[in-house]
Image (cartoon, rainbow, N blue to C red; front, side, top):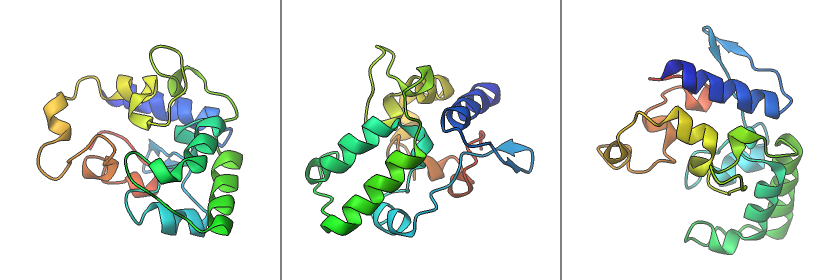
Length: 154
């Protein structure tokens, strides 16, 4: 499973056109560096790195914050514009195979991408709802160094 997770991260890092950095020998996904994005996005969940979705998916997501996965994630227009600009400028311009759904379409859900599914295929579905995990998108529950961009198997 470590090899699949590392392959996913390497693919994401390559797609982001940002070199992966070493962290104790583990590959890193470039971190969220925009202070507004870090503050606003992490108010409800982990501030996901731009590399996990293509620019078009981030554009769509930011346009539809009133229906953000069943919630109204309202932001002031200036803040919304700044965050959208940050995510779209730091995301891969096109969705490569790792960022597409198995059907070859783009998605706004990181957990629906081929890369995420491949990296987690040995995890039993019930594990995402168990204990402190609660949901597939709660990366830090299993990946203790997610805040540092490290997603190796923990």
